[in-house]
Length: 317
Image (cartoon, rainbow, N blue to C red; front, side):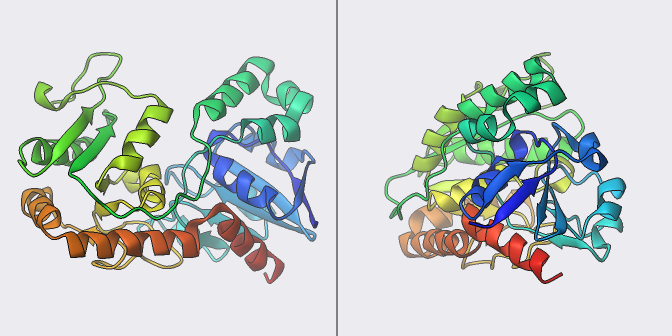
């Protein structure tokens, strides 16, 4: 197997790419002080065949200039189209992903050195977060039956639009007689509802419960996340063969999913009621889009496929 040097200690956001790279190469933790500022952050820095790639899995807060200058290629999950720095020459987009359980791989790769570099308490916290995440399985294809829809979302103080459209989706599902809905918005620990009605509030779900219920949902709503980032739930929904409903992306992807083939786009939350009714009444369209989304996931988003694309681009850079 080829060798890859991992130059920093990523946090749990990067578990999907760690898992994918490990399927293709022998990973070795080789700390590099030039990238120490990215330890325990949503960045995975690798060296392959003498070239360095930075894989950024953060919200779109901007390119990390220090690591950008030191690398050969820079990959960003949320390559925001409107930000100038995400259009710099070395920045590449990558496909959606989500955090998974690779706690034992994390422990094996970083071990004592990892605990010494980021502190034993934080190292164990990261390990436990990974432990509670769902294992990655490329789920078998599911043919959508029934009318169960699950959605749960957090309330973000600085994202009123994202909060409102998710609340609008919950209300549209709650009021639709064709849907057996479970979920709602997760209450904040400070009790602040951020202007949302009490009727959309539900409870917090463990990562395991969230994954299990999402895997049974007929419809998956891929809402914009913080700062217009792509939500982790998008790749999960595709993996579960859900019919995916969402807004047009404000980030770049190597290939954009097509409306009516891989997912269904809406422009405004006022469309939810009509679209949900249409989807629930039209099983052939529901099936077409759900299977198209699964096709998109298996062609582009599997951990091993994403890792191979990164290595191929790096090798040819």
